[in-house]
Amino acid sequence: MGVGHLARAATAAVRQSLPAPVQFCRAAMGARGPQRQLLIDAGKGALAATLAWLLADDVLHTKLPWLAPYAAVFIIGTTVHQSVRSAARQVAVVIIGVLLAAGVGVLIPPTLADVPVAVVLGTLIGRWRVLQPDGSWVALTALLLLTYGSATREYTDVSRVYAVALGAAIGVAVNAVIFPPIRLHGAVSTMAARGEDIADLLTEAAEGLVDGADSERIDGWRHRVWQLQHAQGAEDALAEARESLRANPRRLSPHTGISTAPYEAAATALDGILPQLSSIVTAVAQQDGQWSDGDTARDLRDQLAALLRALSEAVRILGQYPTTPGDGPDSDAGRDALHRATELHQQAKRLCEARPPSTDATAVSAVLMTTQRTLDVVGRPQRATDAD
Image (cartoon, rainbow, N blue to C red; front, side, top):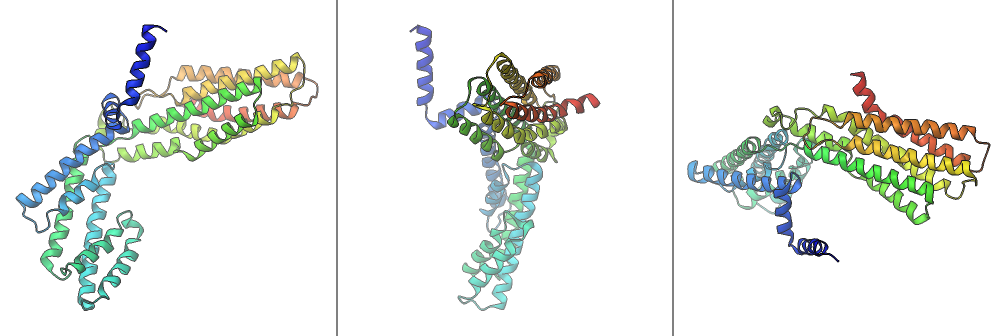
C-alpha cells in the first residue's frame, strides 16, 4: 500500500469524523448550494431582526417592539415576490385578529365564553385560502389580546398592527436588497441530477439485457423509478426558479440569467422520460430468459444494449447544463448522442425484421417500442432549437 493511498485514506477518515457543523461550514464556503443559501438567510434574518428592534424600540418607541423583529424574521428565506405577499398576509392576519378580539370583547362579556368564541371564529377565518399559511395567527392574535385583557384598548391594538407592519416592511427590504434569492441554480442542479439518475438506470438496463437480471435487481430498478416519480420534478424546480425571478433586482445581472425559458423544453423532456423509463425496465425484465439461441439473437441483444447506452448518454447530456444558468447544454454533443441512438435503433429494428419468428419477438418489440418513444421525448428540445 503506497504512501499516497494511505494519505488519501487518512484524509477521508478525518473528513468522516468531522462534526456536522464543520462539514456544513465547509459546504457553505465551498460552492453554491443549500448550505450557502441557508447561511445567507441566517445572516439576513439576524440583520433584519436587529434593524427592526432598533427602529421599533429605540427610534419609534412602539408599545410592543418585540413584534417587529418577530415579523421581520418570518419574511427572510422566501423569494422577493413571495416576501411582499407574506408581509401583506402577516399584516392582514394581525388586523383581522385585532378586529375579531375587539368585536368579541365588546359583544361578549369577559367570561369563559369569549375565548372559545374568538378561537373558533379565528380558526374558521384563518382557513381562508388567501391567508394561508399564516391564517392560524388570526385565532392566536385574538386569543392573546383577550387573555391579556387588551382587546378593547385602542392604543394596544394600533401598536400591535404598527409593529408587525414595521417588521414586515424591514424584512421585505432586507430580503430584496441583500442577496435576493434566485433559485435558478437549484433548478439546474435538479435537472442535472435527474438526467444522471435516468441515465444510470438506462445503463444498468443495458447491462441487464446482456448479462440478465434477477428479480432483486429488477425490483431495485423499479424502486428507483418510483423514487424518481415521487421526487421533485425538473418542471417543479423550474417553476420555483421562475417565481424567484419575479420582482427580483438580480434578474437584470448577466451573471444570473434573466429567464427560465431556455430550460423549459429540457425540463419537460426529463420529466416526460419517466413513463417510458418504467416501460423500459418492464420490457427488460420480461425478456429475461426469453432470448433464443444463436449468433443472430446475440447480435440483436448486443445491438439493443448499445442502443440503451447511447440513449443513456443522450439523456445525461440533456440534463448537463453548465453551472452558469442561461447558457444551455452542449447542443453539438447532445445532437451527436441523439443521432447515434437513433441510428442504433434503426439498425436494431432492421435486425429484428430480418429474423425469422422466435420466442423473444415480444420482448424485442417491447424494447424497440419503448426506446422509440423515449427517443421522441429526448429529441423534442433539439427539434425546438433547430426550428428556432
